Length: 115
Image 1: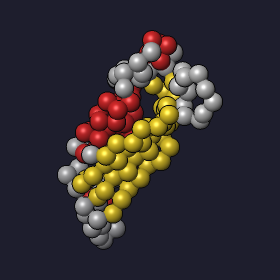
Image 2: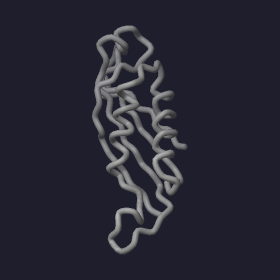
Image 3: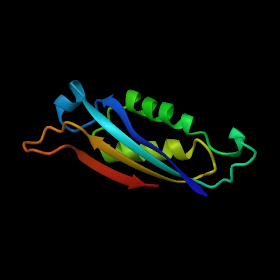
């Protein structure tokens, strides 16, 4: 068993409760952590899970959805990534909204969810 991580994937999204988030959109960053139940052997890709499969799945979810909650987005990512390969035993996702329309000084808003 081992872990594969993709860190700081960047996307432009239209996710949020406020109308301006739906229209203008905002940048988000996503970290993905997957626990893999496999033992790679003989330097063969088919003996493990290809991390190259993860980014396109997440990009398509971002492109095709305008959900209100980042929590909903995280659930969608967990479900789709888990379905990529039956050797994926756990998925953790962190989503950062880079420019949230809240009056205050801070870098970002982040949620973390596991499944």
